[in-house]
Image (tube, rainbow, N blue to C red; front, side, top):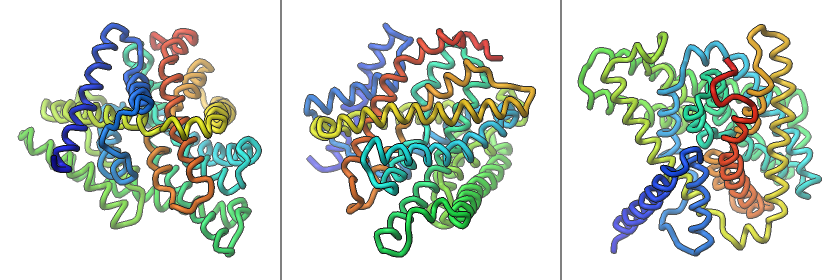
Amino acid sequence: MSGTAESAVSVVGILLVAFLVRILLSYRPTLSYASVLVFAGVVVSFVGVELGIELGTDLILVVLLPTVIFAGTTELDVPVLIENLPQVLVLTLVGLPLAVVLLGAVGTLAFGFPLVVALLFASIILPTDPAAVLSLFEQFDVGERLAVLVEGESLLNDGVAVVVFSTVLATYQTVEAGEGSVSSLATAEGLTALGVDILVVGGGGLLVGSIVGYGAHQVVRRTDDRMAVVLVSIVVAYGSFLLAEHFLHLSGILAVVGAGLLMGAHEETHAKMTATEFFTMDLWQTGSFLVSTLLYLLIGATITPDALGRHAGLVLSAAVLVVVVRAITVYPLVTALNQASHDTISRQCQHIMVWGGLHTVVPVALALSLPVGVPFREELQTMVFGVAVIGTVIQGLLTPTALRLTGLAAGTEE
């Protein structure tokens, strides 16, 4: 059998497992699809079945992630996002770097890593991915504002996190070459350089994607050909990523975010969208569902029993610390924002923002991209995979309980 045929068989097998999971969830609709899927991947790995597809950085970032991100922007309520943009920006631009510093500092004691390695782990693991909980938000009638806060932060911090990771990795490489020290990150020059990188790389990617998306919006508004609109949307999603990431050396992730937001019909509400645009959005949601199915099952199957057994202590301590650090950053920042705004975010919403901060797709991609020779590379990758699995399974499965306990299962935060 050829390699292509083997890959096709693997994909069919993965979709069959996903089908069985969907059938299971038809009897327990309150369970998170992503959580059960990751758990199924773990079971497949522990049983010793080979899925035949290996996760890699390019497969995730170049092939799969643009679909998930672009699809996410098509259903995002942009007016609500604009209203809550200060909160999203503070959580991304202040909260994420602060969390990296906190987890890096604590990680030197909890994990026994050198500071630069602990910071490297923190920059990898902290980007959030709310896919496992957003599907439950709609089912439990959670208010639109909370969903937008969670997803908006995730869309932006993925791109910012890649910049922070690149900066920390470059610092490690200069330290190894004997040309610098990790303390340079804490100097005024280091912080300024990081801020400039985020502004240029992240903001530049967002700007490039927005220009591409707005141009595409003008084109699709002048055609009723559904297939033409679908083709344009595919070119925009992947073209904006490739243009920003590989030609302009900007953030491809944020380019896709900008392209998706500006291409959609978001003048006031989705009610403004044409039938052709609704058709295109439905196709992207289907594509995102299939891609997410592949990703979550492979993430669960990537963690091996041997590696997990060797580093179980590190994985468990990391899983706890990631949640604690997120709580330490989210609660004070949101409290400060509430003091400066009349439109406050309730404490119940803050609880779900902390609990729903899962860490899966982008952290796994960054962990896989670690160069050979980085100290504690195996430990870092196992910790990232372990936190991704534990968070998605445990936090995802307990999200319905958290929504009921906080009283947010009927959109009451609005």
